Image (cartoon, rainbow, N blue to C red; front, side, top):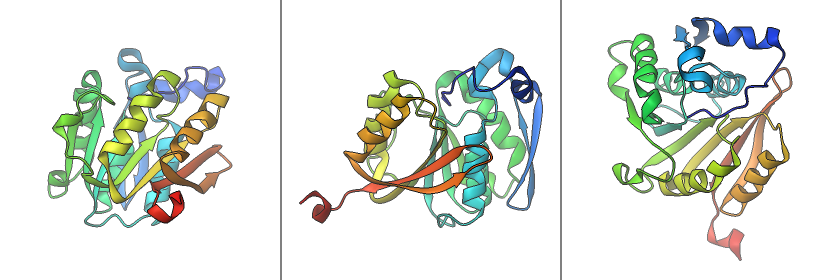
Length: 218
């Protein structure tokens, strides 16, 4: 689930989360994302990190056509929807409680000929990985998923399990607390991590992670 704090901004800033529908334009498509703060809270609103990551994908930050991608903690599904529109085969995941809502957004925003490229699937980090193949994906996407410290170990295990030898991980986040930096330090023990994009207006950074090769570990 997209895990982010409630005290993200002033009351005025939070009003956008109470809109039932928010509209975006990506990949030459108008995307209308339904939000449901009252029922599902943080999992059912569009956070800035998802917008920035979607923009980065549209800018051509990675090759998407034909790639096998997975979005973790998808929430409303914006990032996965954009990836599918740009040519990826995407598995869009979240916890069971959010799946029906997530699926409704995916189906409403993908044309019929693109829908077969997007699958909505349950994934609780560190728990039901047996329904996925090890190293199954070329690209792993996550927007604002590194907030709760108690999830860090399971998230790292999930990233390691799903990530193929040449896979790319893209994590978009706002660094709010020291624990966010602590997660990045944990990530760097297993992967080579670099910052590839920063949006100063939204104060969101995108980090790219890849498996270390043998020479880096010498």
